[in-house]
Length: 118
Image (cartoon, rainbow, N blue to C red; front, side, top):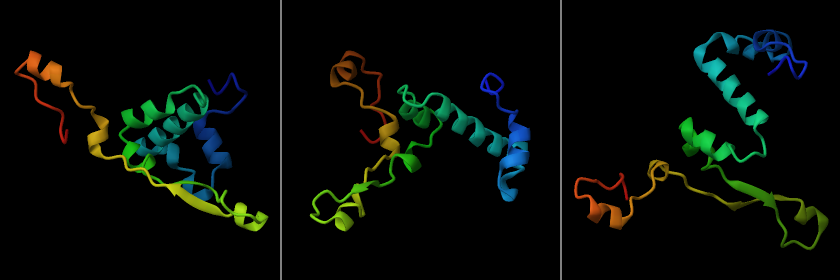
């Protein structure tokens, strides 16, 4: 994929262009995993995969619980309008990884247990 785009391989790119403290990132399993995940998010940007990828990687709790920020649109002056303000702080918990099982399914099969925290 990188060669099609005219890019060098991952190890060479990180060795030549990364900040000095991050140059060894591709040499560790965790670092290489971070690089792969970042490149996958870039490659599939605007294709509707981000939410499901973040859930699959079990990073939704940290990423989807960050505050949503924007401009303060209730201001009348330019300086006030362009001030960054927190609009909403979502809360993604472990409960949100699993959706509830419908009650009709629970009565149809008595062996089913409801998902945790539902």
